[in-house]
Length: 89
Image 1 (spheres, rainbow, N blue to C red):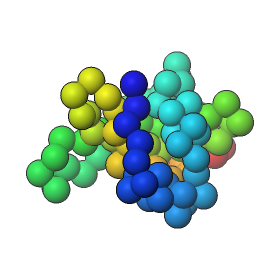
Image 2: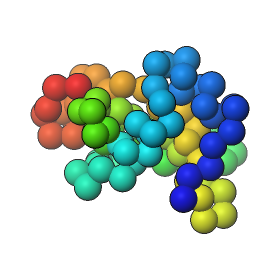
Image 3: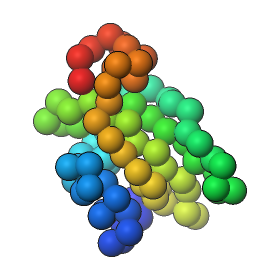
Image 4: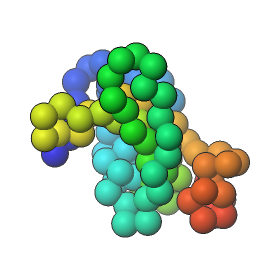
């Protein structure tokens, strides 16, 4: 369902995140779509979702065949937290 390699794992690790947290946020039943920059020529989308540990994350991804490939992610703040439902990050 998800595609991970050293490239995207190191990208999210630089922000203190684990791949499992990103997967949990993307499968959160309450996740909210978020715009994502597709300026690189590749289609991208984003979601705001909560991990099982309760961390609110923004996850940007693309599709590679039938797999989700996380491009980047970060802890949600401000506007993203409000978009999720006003809950604190």
